[in-house]
Length: 595
Image (cartoon, rainbow, N blue to C red; front, side, top):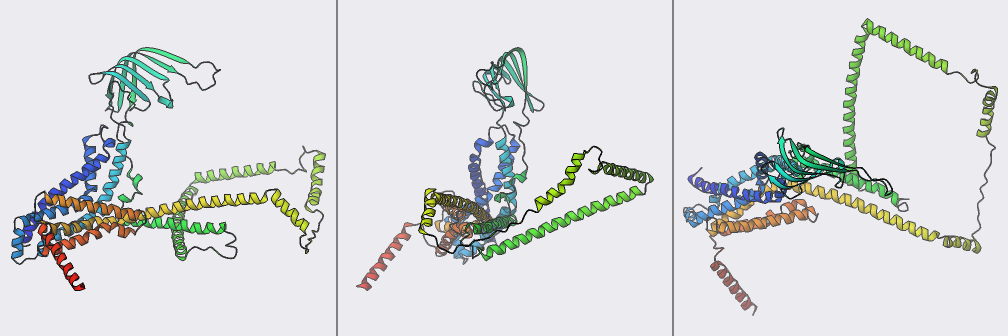
């Protein structure tokens, strides 16, 4: 590496690290403010907050890298231009593109590292972030009873204290107990003083009450005429209540598999699997719609078939073949396991038959089985031989086959079909019309048709909503896939804007570069959100929507490089005055030619 490359790269790395830390801190603050009310004030340890902040820092790094590259490259070449070092480099015969090469190589390596981070590190960190955030949200606030305010942080109890003495002392205590799922203030305890102390590693809390009264009343569940419910009043000198704080105020960690379907915790290969699964569900839903629609229009499909398109049918055949192969593979595994179990049982039975005691047991089992079969045969006697059957019963049994034969073989009756060939008379037509109009058959037919139409419309709208949801999920998975590349390539795009722009501005420090960087980053962020929104709503292709911001900013970068190579004074008033004069002169020339 030449001395020039070391000089330019060394002047870039310091501002890059500084700006990356500053930008990451700003984005971290913005993200933490979103969850401020949910994660603070719950008595968590410092390490829990440190773990959450660490996850946030890693997850927001893909967004912080482009802004850090933009700001640091602009500051670097602004400082070089301000101290005339860039002028000396150009005067020595080195072009601007050659001066940009060391930082460009570093930014390319940084973009590749950002891609690897987006694909492998950030999904795992997002999974842990979601899990920890959910656990913190589910945790109850820390036990903090304030004087003069009802505290309902302990499930089943509402506690009010008029005065707190020291760390654990309480005075003028009111407790409403809602334990057991009871609603209403039916169990109330009043006490002059008390003491609340944690014990057993703060897993339990003991509330000791002194000089108090407990009022309890049963809930009335019957009518007004019933006798009054039982009411109890108990006075006490000392009463102790123990609260279990293990499940209420402790942070219980949830299994991370609960968020396995979220697209932000998946890498590219997992997103592709998700896209294939959603595509299969969408194709099945479309195929089912075509199959069910055929039965809705019997007149249209009487002589025709309402077949689905070829691509849907082919995808359905492919999915069914994959399911069949998977099912056959699972069945083969089950059969092999059953064969192994059967062979194991067979070997065990062979070992038992070699044992004389086992043969004795098996022979005893066979004798018992024969005895049971004989007892069953003795019990199954015929109706004719039973001594308890009377003569009338036997006679009814004998006469029963004849009755059955007469019932099974009735007299044959021949139906004669008469076909009318004469047309309907006017009288018959009037009678039929009167039946149709008088009994409201036409009105009932119209109402039935309307009801069928409404039900069909509702069914079609429900199916359309399901299909739209599948398509929206498919597009969101595609956006998450393409974001792995766009967030990494954004670093290089911001370098193309920042480095030549710094050479044009020739201002270092944190003044003008910061202002220009913030403007371009806001434009980039707005274009990114706009493109992704278009892609989510299906207004444009997800590939174009995710690359929309970069496609819009790349021409600016190429334009700035062109102007920086020509030493253009892009941000000086004289540049625009000379441009306006040249435009005026050209207009005059065109007018003179026209005259």
